[in-house]
Image (cartoon, rainbow, N blue to C red):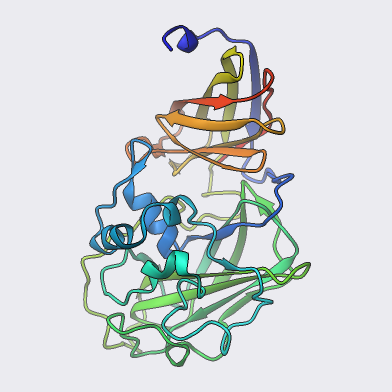
Length: 346
């Protein structure tokens, strides 16, 4: 194993990614995605629990969800879907199962409690939504919000939701740096609420659902009884970026093949913040040859969908100041010496 980790550089691919660079996923059979800003429950718990490549949540609600349903739903934070959804909401997703989309795999994220991680948002302000897209597809988004008086300690029902979405994005916006990014005005709410996202395809019946726990500030005219503080944590891996990432953000990235052997390989990812603002929750994404698979990573957490691989920041190295960089390593399996293409970062 020691000889495999010698830094024998065979291939280096470097790409400069400006804030408006387009990163398109290729080749996967299914679409996957979820809100990252404001963070969906599965993404918020994934970020909260990610340490050393393992998921060990600190937030009590996330910790209980893992104890109940295991860690796989968080590794698959982008997969709360119904293949037969066809964009349906009321009358299709049962009351009490909105956050899981009626999927038993994510049932632990339907549990009513007031300490799920929250994202703080400002009422009536324009907000830049970020919807992570493992695989883009044609369709649209509808965002709903809970009514005044919403009680997080009770099961979420359709009667708790406003009848109409406060924001619709149809057709879908362009993908930028691995995510759909679109802006809209936040509703006039105050205190603890849920933003409910529905992502529907126009080329199939597959539909994604997700709850984002938010804390509205700045609109004291319509307080809700649930506005008391909760012990929740506010994850901020994707803090209200403008299209293409946070204002002033850009980066360069390399994916390097450092060693290879029969049936396997070792690689290294580097990223540098070339922008003028802090880059939070960085990632590097690239395309692998067919059949190649990333099996292990260090100094970052690996994810893969089809040929598209990605390494996310760890909690301890997630914030890169202007000019700062980070390096992560990974191991993989392949029947031949792999090449890395379509490299992007954000």
